Image 1 (cartoon, rainbow, N blue to C red):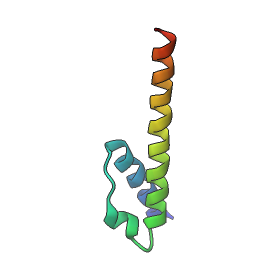
Image 2 (cartoon, rainbow, N blue to C red):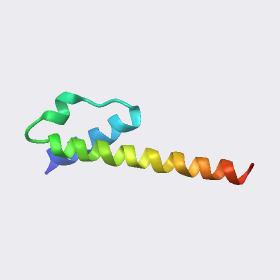
Image 3 (cartoon, rainbow, N blue to C red):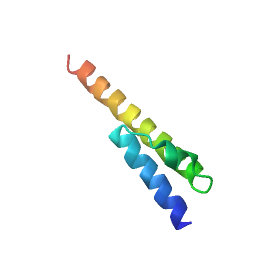
Amino acid sequence: MDDALRAYGAGREDAFAGLRDAGKAEDPQTGPDYRTGFLDGRIEIFRMLAEVREILEENG
């Protein structure tokens, strides 16, 4: 369980940094957790950028 959480966290960190580690993503044990963390991180970035765009549009 700890390895899965670390892999998920590493995926999120890599997503925020804009980097994807193919080795971690393909690992048979923790790859799915890494990929899920990466995807969740990218979705969070997308939502944050959408909120910024919305704020900017409201303020002219």
